[in-house]
Image 1 (spheres, rainbow, N blue to C red):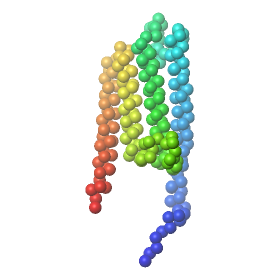
Image 2 (image 1 turned 60 degrees about the vertical axis):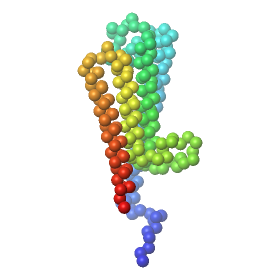
Image 3 (image 1 turned 180 degrees about the vertical axis):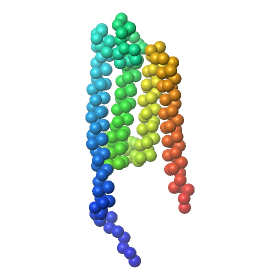
Image 4 (image 1 turned 120 degrees about the horizontal axis):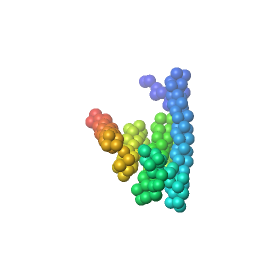
Length: 201
């Protein structure tokens, strides 16, 4: 009778090299952490501009207007801080937060799935979704997050619709629905594939 292979037996050189190549992704995740830091700085810069504009700073107001309108500040030199502008800035801040959440999912979920286990079981701060994350779950969650980000962008566009051309409005709407249909297709495909093994005997 053939003996079972020892699970602790070291890998052969070539399989070991291929398996260790997963660590080449580590610099990519470290780069995303740096990108997360850039978003944190951007968030606080925009928030400070909003606070300064609320206190009457025209320089901060012009910075806000140049950020929330596609036409710049040339014809908006006498603009005031209105509820619509505040709403656009706040939606921009929410957009930054949602993109940061997306980065966290990619960094933590991607590292856990493709590089190495973090051994967070039992940790009080372990994300709920990380306990059952895999490539399929991560793919669906990322698609859902992208839809949320697209929704914020579309809402900002509609609130400030007079600053955009009809072609731009239609294009953004079509792109959003494309993201939505893509996410639905990914979720349905994942559900179909998940049901295949259960039908086998």
